[in-house]
Image (cartoon, rainbow, N blue to C red; front, side, top):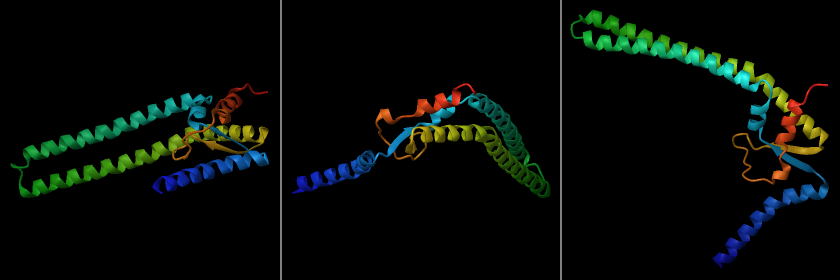
Length: 178
């Protein structure tokens, strides 16, 4: 009985999974997929934009690290000298450390926002070109849908490689302009 139920569940899963594909094939609907990560990496201008962003991000991270090192140094200095300070001087130094920590957190948040904005400035035009190329390939090939297996959470774990249009889209993006 248990074996029969397991077999029926397995058969039902196969039918549910195969039915949309079979139905699509019967009515002439074409579907395909691409890997947008691979396409993006092959898109003209992506490598330069990514390198520029990485350089800028490095300088912003270095600034945060310098601020953190300064705060750490001030905290160590406070620890070493706190026993010889008067209570009012100790409180003043403690407030200075709190202010320095707040400054560090504010600057880090500002740089994080700046980095996200800069990344969008550099990559949005490239991503728009990729999306346009995918749409052109979809329209020219009369595809009803093109899935993105490179997208996090795509849910696609296996697909027929003959449905992969990744290289077609890369070719569309890298062909010389007329």
